[in-house]
Image (tube, rainbow, N blue to C red; front, side, top):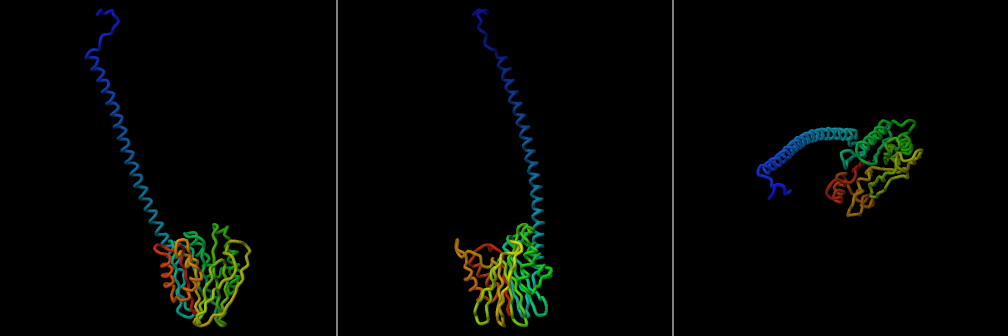
Length: 299
């Protein structure tokens, strides 16, 4: 074939070798890039693991500190609860929070030589905020720190509490309460409640009364006036102050324990522990849905 025919000659062995070497160099360059990327990924992963380990350690340290602080707070709440009384009126109580910190608290103390107060309150919700409000309210009652208030008058006490603890100044928290005053010389028990479950009076003859008065929870509405009622108690009578967590349990899916059934069982009980065991049996495994608070007073 003539050199001037216009058809290019086929590439020789040298040209093919050069092309292969160029392709190999390109592949090697890509491999080097991938190795660099891999190393960078490994180093980044190790750095992330180190950061996660540090963050996890910090989280564990924080959780440990918070647990210790919650334990200290719970211990303080229990430390301000009154010692059981062995002199008349004899008292026995049980408080079991459903979480680390609950909103239930109670107390009793002599107002003067002839008058003794008994009270149990329940702050809405759980946690630190509820516990702080509960402790504050209990300390106010214990120290009689409500100005111009006759603590022998349960209605006046609840009205003053309502003025002192409006929910808009308590992070929208409120509390229910039952407050009673025994006049020792006459056996008259005056009481008032604000949104709280009735207390249960089991008389020595076996008859049972529930004691409550109309009135909404403390702090929900300003300028509320609470009124007291009264009854007479005698030797052998028993008064049970309760929170709603003692009876608001499901006996079956969607079926709540009837309050009257709880009253009937409470009237037959001798100790708060017996009532707790019965309620736990109805509730089933796991913690109760709310704080369990029960204060028994035997006259």
